[in-house]
Amino acid sequence: MSQRIAICSGKGGVGKTFTSISIALALSDLGRDVLLVDADLGLANAQLMLGISPELTIADYVEGNKTLLEVTNKVDDRLKLIPGASGDASLANLPLGALSDLYEEITSTFHDSYIVFDLAAGISNQNMHLLKLCDQRLVLFVDEPASIADSYGVLKLLHLSDKLDHTYLVPNQVKNAESGKKFYERMNHLCLSFLGKPVGFAGAINEDQAVKASIRQRTPINTSFPDSKAWYNVRTIATRIANEAGDTVFE
Ligand SMILES: Nc1ncnc2c1ncn2[C@@H]1O[C@H](COP(=O)(O)OP(=O)(O)O)[C@@H](O)[C@H]1O
Ligand SMILES: [Mg+2]
Image (tube, rainbow, N blue to C red; front, side, top):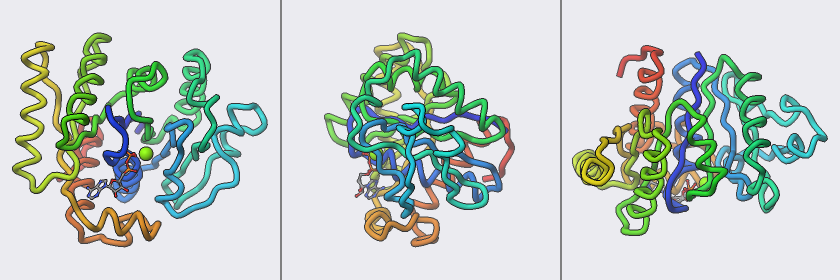
């Protein structure tokens, strides 16, 4: 099964990296091969949350010193990580042609895997480019005016490129399932009113102290807090992603 999933948000700090690594782990728990790409080029931290310290990063590949497989780390039997490179502005500003080449190389090398891209926040050309290339897009947001406004900005740009299909909202840090759904409906209403098109719903993630604790411990939530609400929410989202990809999994 090959499926490319981009995780993005308008505003930073809303839970993209937590969600990306957790969805990658949930898909691998379902028995699927998964590659997680830290595509927050310039501000990498997926490896921190996974509790690993890779020696090589995507920068070593982009600069031409290493092959893609050499910079790919094995997290477990089914999950691999291409780590990002922190503080490297040249990567964040990669020309779009070079970004397309990178994407092609990654997707052809890992053609039988789910590939999860943890993107940077915002509407840079690079981010929008990767978003449009992927098969499914998850847009995370939290219940704050800036996050709502900025994620609407992402949705509007996706709509202008005719890519609102296969785009799904993920309200994060919600009080409960009901408020998460309501929060989604408010955003969907904005899209229907101003863009004339609906946007999908992938599921909401509860505000959960287990998320913060797992990040502090540098131990992914599936091993540190397997009974937490947030992990349950992420597994539901991962199941929907798989089903959407035509890879039938039962919820
Ligand atoms: N569901 C959640 N419940 C509680 N805290 C959360 C949740 N999601 C994210 N956080 C908090 O938000 C912070 C930022 O998350 P992170 O995944 O690094 O965001 P981003 O990648 O979007 O910048 C985390 O360190 C954590 O403290
Ligand atoms: Mg991040």
